[in-house]
Image 1 (cartoon, helix red, strand yellow):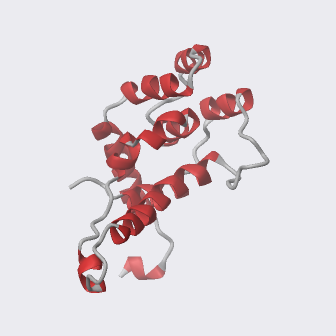
Image 2 (cartoon, rainbow, N blue to C red):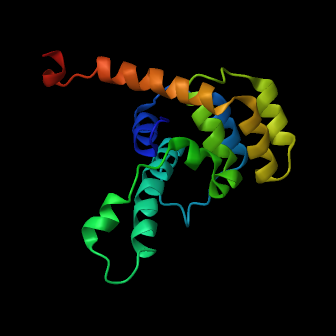
Length: 162
């Protein structure tokens, strides 16, 4: 089974590796400060995966028939996969998110050719398509799973040492 959107978002929330490519992209195409609710691309990326899980749950509840028992609605909710979010239409116009995720997971390592290429592309959807083709979902998920395992193993929480 694939990684859940919630687990993927949790990994993204913990990533702190330098992201010079994403920083350069953000410098060239800054996000609007007036309508922005996030304060970093990391926060934005993690929140997208967390919120998709939440909205998927709400959507499933809304489409249930009137009068159907709540227990039945809750049982029909399943975890949303991270791949589903990565492949979603709403994610296809946010190149800064895709770039940051690839770089923060260690898949892109200061590849200035990639940066020059996405800066030369005009449309955000085309930038996203280009970034999406650089790595398969399996490569992205494998990198996230390695990071997940590292985070669990290195956790400072005392109960993990039992």
